[in-house]
Image (cartoon, one colour):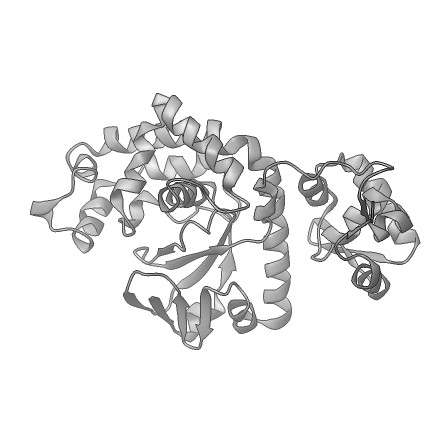
Amino acid sequence: MIRIELDEPTVTRTRIAISPLWEVVTSLHLLHAHPTEAPWPYTGWARHARRVLAEVPETAPVRLFSAAGSRTPDFLTPVPPSSTPTLAEELAVLRGTPATLIAEEVPRYHRPDALPGWLRPFVDDREAALDGLASGIEAYWDAAIAPWWPAMRAALDEEVLHRARALAADGPDALLADLHDRVRWERPVLTLVKSLEHSFRAVDRRLLLIPLIFSRGALTCSTDHPEIVAVSYQARGAALLAEGAPAPATADAAVADRLAILVGRGRAAVLRALSRPATTAGLAATLGLAPSTVSEHLATLLAAGVVHRRRVGRRVLYGLEPAGLALVALIGGEPTAVPA
């Protein structure tokens, strides 16, 4: 267990951010934790990522994260510089890590006279080691994650909007209590359920929550920053990585989708996806439909009174009205087999 005791000012300053760099690191932990076959919904993606690691020599530096084990100095996974950074922005921070920060953090994890081989280059030849790692991350990202990133980013945007709305409406206690079943909040202690044993007290800092599609690989915690404690958790939406989508039903298919029969297959898919609020772009990415198609379905569902739309900042979120919830609950369950 990792137990983080948070004082009141730290809890009050809870914020949310995404991190492409943390996605990279936790995706590698996922591959390391499941060396033969990754669980659903990561199975197909993991097969592709393993081919990338085996066939793209430029990705070799990222193997450091597997060699390093569960605890690494936080300079290798810096706190995101903004709430929605690009990978390039995060890698600029990584490349610019000062020697003083490395000298400060390394002794917290390893004795200076017994540094592991993967860590020594960052002490002996900092700039070359940091640049080599950043370049390896770029190569891995381009081949293993970038094809999925638009859909991942849309899902993460939905997650951030959902959590920000909960934070504003119900406060940080309610938010922290509902993050994930492996993240437990019993004021004043936030517990991450994992095999590593570590305790830490945060006084007068900021708590930064980072939702990750790949957090199944590892719950990550960064405590070395003087002003910020960063904690990752599993974001919803990881199903977008699943292998393909179910084949469209045909007239003589052996399954009957009652909701699709009633409202049409596309609108049925949108209704089911709106079990959590979503934007048009998020729905399009999740369902694999064109945004114009999703917009057309939403317009029909809005006119029918089963869906509502609400503006949250610069984004428009769609959600289910009570009638829509009832429709999905009563007849929108799993398709039923049709007797031959």
